[in-house]
Image (tube, rainbow, N blue to C red; front, side, top):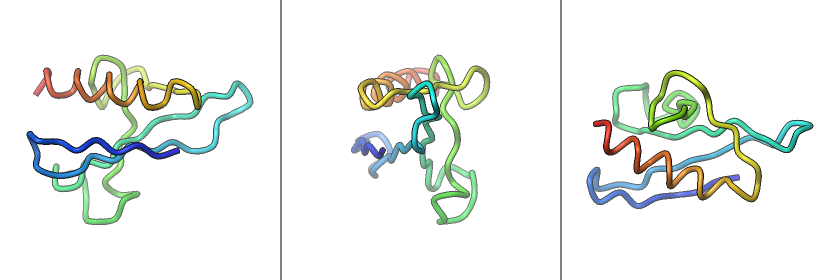
Length: 83
């Protein structure tokens, strides 16, 4: 699964992705924060698991296929508020 948010604040796309869901139909969600100091231009190196309350540390968010886009939007809004 993949979802892209066009960020006006950062002037670039912010990509979210998740692997295939586990047996409970939930997948860990990651965000690609290119240029945010988390690695080089390789998607795997720049990706971070998203966590509750717009954080990159703590209780990780797992999404279903149905909730994936909504969970990404909600996390992004919280992340921006925390910055």
